[in-house]
Length: 292
Image (cartoon, rainbow, N blue to C red; front, side):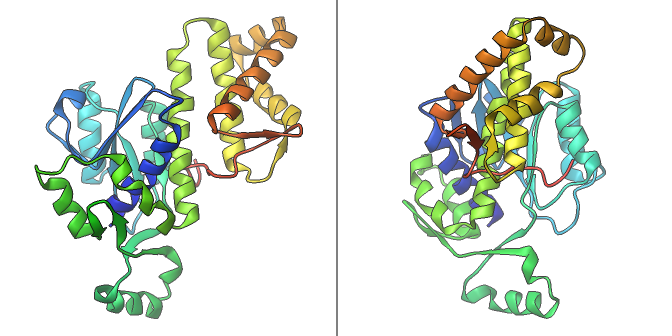
């Protein structure tokens, strides 16, 4: 069920932005031509020219570096073949450092378990209530799709069938059935993968400085649900520059601030953020990380 919920949520984000950014979303499968390994991913996201196989976990414990899932990822990353994204209940700081700092990838903390809510799981819900852990669970009903109403088992069967050629449009309608906080985290993950890729695409010092400013500002806005004054956000982003980037900014601060303001307008036009009345906000997305 966690895989189905994640795919539905990412389909909604993908369809919202596919006309504005270079991206491709593929369902669960073995995408050897993209990843060069015979490894099944829960869905494959190609964004800003970067392959991002996404692995969905529904573990009740922190995912640590000695877990089989992380060891498998580490093996493929060591040979330069794979930079997977991990979407799970919650990861340790060590795992986050591994994915984000060492692999230039991303982790998304769903924070809650994703469990099916229907007549077959009433006993599970009663047990969760008895153990007082129900508040840590997202109870998700079977989801309506163009392949019928699916739960985790029927989704797996649908994806595995060679007769079906799945498309995001087949699943996007079910996003409204998911908890808002969960959808917002997945949307934040999708957008942040694009924003973070800007730096690796940059070819000049100016482009790298602007990409870093955008990373700083976007991370800040994702973590702050209230609207912030645009000048305050720009000040925050510029104050976090260091080294040569800070020096380059100081050499022509007025021009940099003007161009960064245009950059923010560009992302407003794409729907990544809202720019209104001198303020900036991201009302429909949250930061994928619960802590770092």
